[in-house]
Length: 405
Image (cartoon, rainbow, N blue to C red; front, side, top):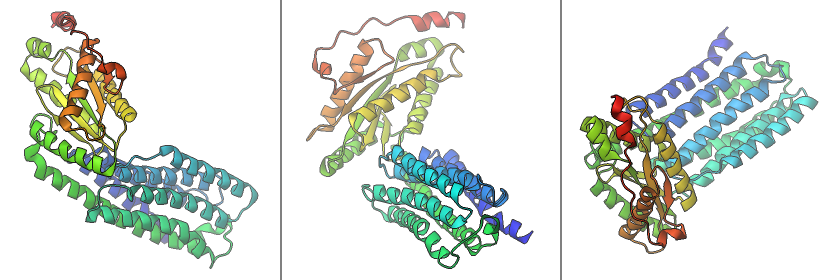
């Protein structure tokens, strides 16, 4: 009974931290990487519970635990990298998982010894965290909090790679039926508990630091959307553009505009228009990374500066936002009404100023408006340099849809 109770401490702590991160994400309107921290701890908690309650000699025990531990590790590493503004290659993590899962399946089939299984799965987790450390070392952020995160990720990688081998020097063989009575099982509960708490404290500290910074910058925020206002956005992107050119990093700009917005105000009123702007701003804020910047630069016009992002991924982000906004319901409008937005995308060229970059993205937005709206146009398309067609007359679909109001 005492062993059962002690075995519940680690998963309960993991669930507590999962809830903590979800609350911070929700209350602080934090970026999605904070939610990722919570999901990672929830997945790890499930892995702990499976290890503790499934029969120790069941052939599927290690397959089940590996799945949830691996998913938790992947989500955690990806979220930490996203916070630092680093692109990650999810396919690499999948390859590591599949290789370790395949080798594990062979080990389970040919041996009842737990030792080989432990080494296989832990090496897989260690490689994932080592990949995360390598990615973080390329990040442009280098304050004390960032260094603490790199250190804790390196500790995770070192532990996963070294602990099984060192422990098994004392227990050369662990039969499946004796796994929960082994020295390794006693040690792993303690080590995972300490690692879980330490990692959570560092990530909570980083989240609170990010939240505090956001509060200090609240005077630079647009009151309706919570995004940067025009002055703050332009000041920030000039500095970001200079840094991108110095560090030879790609920087892309997306300019977006809600379609037929004047008709929204005319038909449903300015309060409905404000709610539409607020909803669009909230959607953008949810879909960009912590290293990106988004601002409201006009009445219904928005800008997104996407750090360390080439042209094609920037265009795909704009397309995802466009599709999500087209599906969004608006309480202040008729039930059958959906609003749309048009987007222009441009990627900074060598030595280009913000004014010129914005002009190219804005020209792409103009092309999207001229070509029927509810679309994404890319300034890097050579056709963008050709003369743009004149804008078409304003359609009246919204007025007809409002007739039954």
